[in-house]
Length: 307
Image (cartoon, rainbow, N blue to C red):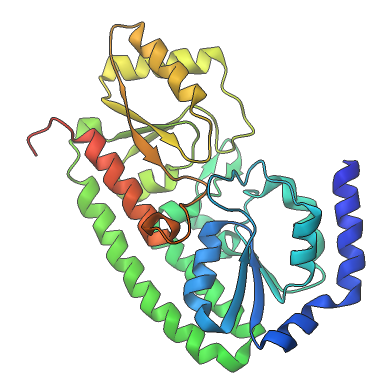
């Protein structure tokens, strides 16, 4: 609590100094800070050469557990626009982001989507909207509109980039549908460490089971491990998956519990959930990350099938 209070107070002082305008005047670009790689990629594609983008959370970083550092406060305070996911994904940055909402332009991209488009689990909105590509296009529109509002001189460029990217996401949506349809209906079950993939399941016809809840702050107990192991052994699920931003220990515990039931389940591969891949790789982009996940899931769940 003391550290959070210090960051909030430091932020208030920095915002009062008005540092953001100086950077924009010097660079000639709109200075945008994004929290996660997913929302950062929207800004990167739509903003293109007109935006100077900083993403706070890199590959392998869990946004549920992420705490803003003093350096982050400096970056946020000097931004012309802050884009974050919202829906409590960046839970431990909540106080800092709330403070910023009242002092400078901000956008919670997932919260710009109508509530009827959101999944509710355990009384809370699931924040992992980006795994339903059709719905993520709605977040794209929100980012494009916000960029145009803050930087109207380049509104036409933002609109054109958004239109091109919307077409690309439409193609990605159809790719996901086609690939997942190759999995036999009885094997369309995706098992991971935490409930990050419910939008993928709803959008493309997968049953999704996470060992933890929608936040990695929730810890799985022994009973959770045993219940999941029983499900896997009973239904003969061929594979489960580890996540790049979550420790594999819990998944390994499930495998051991399944083995004790005289069934062998394999790790079907590594999937990206709350973070994307390294910059400069296909998985370091939203489109590449989604394709990697779908290809990995389909490959593991169809292995040994004739289709």
